[in-house]
Length: 305
Image (spheres, rainbow, N blue to C red):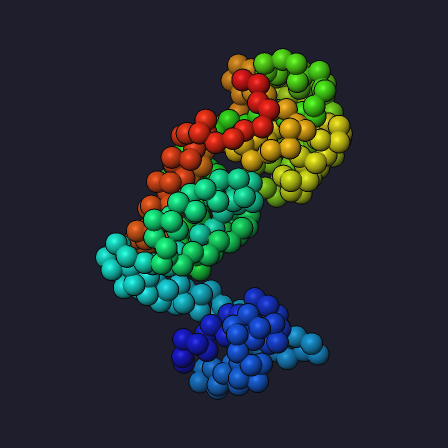
C-alpha cells in the first residue's frame, strides 16, 4: 500500500468518478485507475463497484475511507511540522470555516498570515459545522473556525471572540430611523429566517424561543447572501452577524442592535483532541481575535448604534 494510492482512492471516493478524481489529482485517468486496482490487489478486496459513468464504494471501501483520510492527515501534519522548521518558517495549513463566518471574517486574517509568512501554503474549506467536525476528527483539515457550542467527543475548542447579532432592514424601513430595535417590535415584523442547516439559524431560533418571540417568518433562505438580498428588496427584516454588516458596502441596508439583551454568538477555534495545533493555526487564531476585537478599524456600512 502506497500513500499516493490512498490519495487517489480518497479522491475517487469523494468525486464518485475516476475521471474527476484524475483531474483533481493532476494525473492521467488510466494511471489513477491502475493505482487503485493495485491498492485493491494489495488489500485483497474490491473497493469500488464500477458503474456506467462513475464508481460506488463497496462496504470495504466505505470502511477504508475514514482510515485513509486519517493516515493522509497524519502524514500532512508530519510534513507541516518538518517544513515549518519548528514553527518559524514556511508551513502548510488546512482551515475549515462555516459559511456564516468564512467570507466575512477569514480574508483579513489570512491576508495578514500570508503577508507575514509568504511561504505558507493555506487551503480553506467552507462547510456546515457537523461536516467540519467530522473532517477534523478524520484529520482531513487542521483546524476550523466555528461558532459554539461544539458537541463532539474528539474535538477541542478555544473561544477566540464573540460578536453581536444585528437587526438588518432595507433602507427606508421605519426601524431605520431609530438607534435600535426592541424585542417586542420584532414580533410583528415580516422576517427572513436563515435555514436551520446553519448553526446560526439554530442559534437564532433558540434565542427567539428563550425570549418567547415567534417571528412572522415569510421566507427561509439557505445562504446569508440570499437572505440579505431578500432584505434589500423589502421582503422582511432579519438577524445577522455583525461581521456581515462590516462586509456590506452597498449602503442599501441598515443594521441596528437589539435593545436590552440582544443575541450574541461565540467564535471558536476547533481542532482534533490529541493533536498539537500547528504554529500557523495559532498565528491565524491571533489574527482572527484581533479582527473581532477591533471592528472600528475597518470600513462599515450604515450601522446605527
